[in-house]
Length: 228
Length: 266
Image 1 (cartoon, helix red, strand yellow):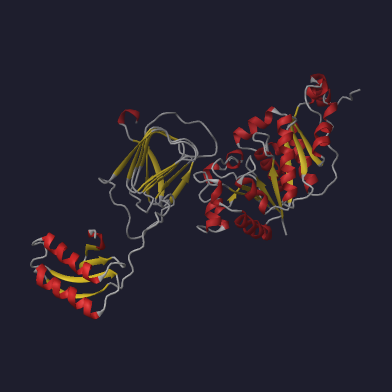
Image 2 (cartoon, chains in turn blue, purple):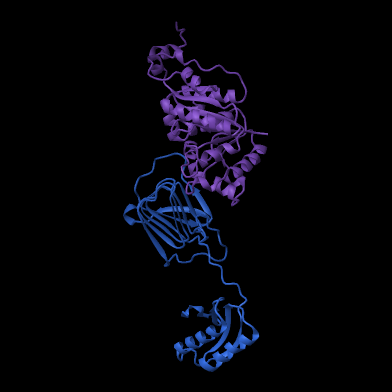
């Protein structure tokens, strides 16, 4: 007889005893006693709601286990009954939730603009790639056309930003976008969307710039004094 | 009720997207209401060729998933009245859409538009199946190369297997000087193999490269030979009977100069 026919499991509100269905009652009783003995003073003074699962027990058998536990464990056993709750279904890992189109939340949104959780992404974000994060996002590299960078906080690009960028994606209009070379295809902050001008060129390349929202308009300004 | 026309080829790089952009623009110039659908999810290009890349907010996948209404995703062209683009998603893959969803989408668009032109991705997998699902006409694009013709032949077979009878053929990037020298397949050679009706021949034209890079379809460029070819194809799609452009007469610089001054050539 192995010891595997009885398993004790702690739960939020007490103890669940899992009984092997094919085991006879006598040996189950024996094993429970052994287990309690092995636990030593563990149960002493505790107040437990005990449930059992697996083998069907008669009222008489239930009572026997109850008495045994009261006598041997030193705990206050409030009740002993069959566990009717369905065991929690094992979650089939759902496909990672895409958060590229984060819902604009009216009342709650990410507030760590001044200081808050940040992610550092190292490398070029290429066309078709999406980097998103619930927090501030720092890209150490370029963001190419066709790539998407989405964050609920600020977006900082240590390189050229030529793709689509969305800062404050869940609604924070305080969020900013900063890049060493700010030429985004489309720039969104919270629910404000702007796009690049249709005529190409004409801009001085490689000026660090900062984009922010004021009165539902996106403003872009240089932030290093020597460039002013 | 509008018509759904799929532009397909099998082989990549033969000019499906350019053809889609030019035919769509051409039809819009004729006063039709046209929507272009890019089904090349993950490798979208049509928005770039149309110069509408920076306007994309919602895309095809958002529409079929129901995250937005069709109207929200349609991008109105910046130059031509009555021309709309439904862009593909870039950060997803072909399996994000299935043929049933495409059929439903095309049926809805049919109510509203005269022509729905579907730009098909290269290949014969999921993307191709999606693109042809809702179509009731097909145009096969090929170039005068053995490999492109081989793939076009495969595509014609697949179209027929999917109840898309009688596809039309566009032979793209024809270089008449090479054909004359016997270095390139002739149009007749190609039709001989594919045995489908020709709807147009588009000459190889440097202007196409310029126009696709600028995001302005060449069809509206009156100086462009390819633009002229696309204008003719547009008319044929609308049911007019336009003769295939005679590329043979174009022989050299002197001819062009003479034509420019309106001199009669012998």
